Image (cartoon, one colour):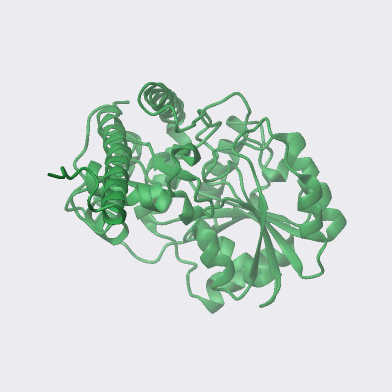
Amino acid sequence: MDFDTPIDRHHSYSTQWDFAADRFGKYDVLPFSISDTDFATPPEVVDALAQRLRHPVFGYTRWNHSDFKEPIVRWFYRRGKAQIDPDWIVYSPSVMWSVSTLIRLLSKPGEQVVVFRPLYDGFFGAIQANGRELVGVDLSADASVPIDYDVLAQACTSSAAKIFLLTNPHNPTGRVFTREELARMVDIARKTNTFVITDDIHRDIILGTVPYTPLTDITTEHVALACSGSKTFNIPGLIGSYAFVPDKALREAFLYELKQKNALSSTSIFGMYAQIAAYTRCDYYVDELNAYIRQNMHYILAFLQEQLPQIRFEVPQATYLAWMDISQLGVSSEDLQQACVQYGHVGIMSGTTYGDERFMRMCVGCPRTKLERGLQGLLRGVRGLKEASAAQEVQSAQEVHPHEGVQRL
């Protein structure tokens, strides 16, 4: 698959490209923000969509059949030997719709949802806009730093804590949780009567040696897993996801929300065709994608070590999100984001968006040429911020000592 050739996404109503000013205040920025890729969808998926387009009727569409479910079951087995019962599978328009719906079903307003911090920014709305309290437990991006299970257990022990919301692999740190780590989390959740919801949308983008393990491999009690092929195959605009809900009563309540309350049970026909084709014929694409993303991450590491050694970065275990520690620069990530826009004309996300101002998040699912331009823009942003700071110091000194340097006769 050709991941090197840039594809112009302007004038396609792209959130990342055509509406960059919404996030960065200017249109003339090279964006590294939204976590979709700049890569072409696999040709097998495009062909499946083109074939369906030749049928001129696009009516209401059913998802509850083996043609939708079996490719998911086989995908999880083929790429990790996970055993998935097709009866667990439910359709959802998006992973975040699944997460928000499960939060409403499993807790009441005012109750608590425990999360690892930093966290995917969509979780703030899913929790707080639904009237629940967010309780954060710090998680290191360094996988060699153990999870503080005591703090996690303390957070889950509260009588108000009803849900532990997880991302696996973790967004934004790129950490993949081991089978042993997941088992410890499940044990804490069981002892504290906390339900675990896990968002596994980045499950395919594995860059390191730790394999992805779905939570349902650990237990099928008091857990639900939301997922989609949208990140992997760059098809979020086609709409569609799925969830594993092993508990029958919860599954029926979820489907009641989907169909009776929200009238969403008719799937996007293109999202369904795309996912079936991707999960049936595109293993090679994922393997090549991961190899390319891994090379991008190593390019970032080499660039920062040479040009910006104050920015600490390690190649993540998963995702196409580079989580960069800027704390040694002595500037806030919000100020650096603005400097990158002003001086470097690149849009890189402030870690404040995800709950940690010491970091920047850069989506690097893109051709190498774009990444090179982005890193040069980051360099110009850092330099511009330093030059502006130095100029401000000189100006402040002159205001305090206005006659210094003036020759007296």
